[in-house]
Every structure is written in C-alpha cells, then in structure tokens.
Length: 443
Image: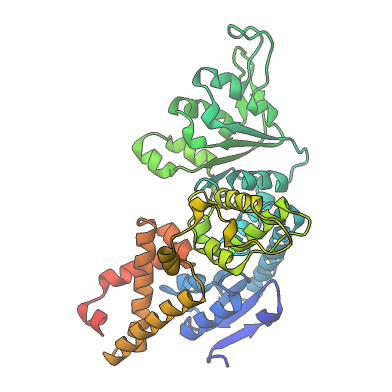
C-alpha cells in the first residue's frame, strides 16, 4: 500500500525500462518505494515532484541515492516531453548494453558495473567527447576503449590506433606520434606516418597516458585540441580528426597536484572521465565471470563449479581484478577431468586457505548464520538499552559509511561505490555528523 502523496505511474515492476514516481514530499515512504522499484538502480525510475518545494535541501540527493535515475519537478507538458525523450534514450542505451557486442566482451550484471557500462555506452554512441578511463590494473580499460571505438558513429570510420605510453622512447616520441619526413634525422631513410595520421577518422587510444613525460604532454596539446600537427622534418601542417581515448591506473589529479601531470593536458583528454570499478566493488559478477571464462576454456560440456569452490571464489581477494580471476580459472581448468563439477581439490596448493582462516572468511552456510546471529544480538542489546528505531538506522548508516571509508583509505568515491550510494550522500552524512549536537546524537 502506498503512502499518501505517492503515485506510481506505468507499473515499474512489469516494465523492463522503468517508469515514473510522482510525489509531493521526499519522505521515507517515497525513498523506500524508489529503492524497491529501481532494484538498486538497475531499473530506470524518475522521481517527479508535484509541488514547488519537493526538491529543496537534501531531497534530490536522497532520491538519487535511493536509486532514482533522475529527480525533477513537474512543470507541465514540457516535462512530459522531456521524460519521454529521456526514456527513448535510455531504451537505446539498454539495447546496446544487452547487445552481443557488449555482452561478449564486457560481461556483468552487478548494479555498480551496470551503471558504469550504461554511462560508457551512452557517451560512446551519443557524443564524440574525449574519454579518460581510470581504474586499477586488470579492470578492463582496454576492452572499454575498444567498445567506445566500436560504438562511435562516424561517416568515415577509421581504425583504432593503440599507443602504449610506457614503451614510447622520449628521443623517438616525435616520430611515434607525429611521423617524420625522409631524411628528417639519421636513419630516417623513408617517410613514416605517426599515430595522429594513422588515427585520422578513427580512434586514438593512449594506454597508460599517465606515463607521458611533461615535455611530451606539452607537445601534444595543439593536436589534441585543434587537430593539426607537423611531422618531424616538415614545415607543412597536416589535419587529423580522431576520437581520443586515454587510460591510466594513476590518479592524474594527484599527479597534477604534484606537478607531474599538466592541468591543461588533463582537461583536453578528459572531456568525460570514467572510473572502472574493481572486482571487489562488483562481487556479484565474480561467479558469472568465472563461468564465462570456464566456458571459453572448456566450450564442450563446460563443467559447473562446486558449491564450496564458489564460496572460495566469492571470498577471495583479487588484487589483479578480472585478469586475476581469469588466471585462477585457467589454473582450475588445468586440473579438471571427467564429467563432474570442478571442486576445491582443483585449487593449486598456493591458493588453498588454512582450515582456520577458511572457517572465518569463506561464506558458507554455517558462516553466513554466525554474522546474522551476531547482528541479531547487537540489535537486541541496543533495544534493551532503550535505542529507538531511528537511532538504530542512523547508527547503522554512520557505521557503514565509516567502515567503507576506512576500507577505501578515505576515498569517498570508492566508498560510495562500495555502498551503492552517491558521493554526495557520504558528504551529507559526514556533514550531518559534524553539525549534530550531543543532544541530537544521544537522542
């Protein structure tokens, strides 16, 4: 039953592409409804306020944190047209996300990954912006770059040119990027086209762009911004038109603060920036990815994974992310024979946890019951001590934010992704905590 002032349009539960929630005030009933209908952000739900003050204060950010794709106030027929256009665009994006091109290369259904993939697909297909892809090693940055190239719409579609910036020799970097004329330097027996010429009409992918020295960053500024360059040894300007995609596992903002990355170059390569989540942030994709890799390795009669082995895979840390998981699946496949499932005996000896650590870290049934019992005991103790429901909810929220920030070394963005909320929600939580008086905290 819906709370007063809340109406659900278009029965979101029965629609793959979402719907609209109309409300007067963003109270807890509205937020709960959006959480339920959006499925953690997997389904597109737009929150539309029916009164002028519906989106004042923290309301917009709370609605987005609850899973709303957008929040706006109703202003007549123009709002309806705007909503219709948004849902048409989202439908196109979701059809591309579900396409064979994407599914065969960037598998995953975890809400954090799905949100990232949707954003990548939309920018790739409906814009020509330069894209900076960041993320830890092994998160799939090159695969995302190749997807952006594949989805980019051009009348004259050129090639994807990949330059590994870690292998660029400073003394030859001019020739590598700009090309050279015959006789431009000793050994230049013939003219050569550089990356900028080869990428004309296509996509230039600079992998590990954070490794470029400052002098080379300065040299690349003009061609990245204006699309013109001179080959080494030439006095003639050449034009090129390419989409620029860069990737790095470095924090370029921090590098900029240290003076090792140019601010003007950063803004030229990052018209849109995307951080790929680590595998620990998308645990729901561990088993689907493992099964996908296994099907690639053993396509005929692909074996299933034993329950205990699944528990281990879910609990294991993956410092190398998806690449690390794939390597483990490869090692498991080497030990499999027969028609039965792959079991824990297939784990290499250096992968096997001790019985003591396994009983704590691997989430089997008995282990799942113990944290639940501990949680029940803690709640029961708090109730006995006179805690109200609001105190319990506020305390749980505050503790979750604190622990997530500790786990991510204070990085708000990563902590927010881990919790499935927005950066803004964490900032608001911390601000509320700082401004709360003792009376507010103690109830």
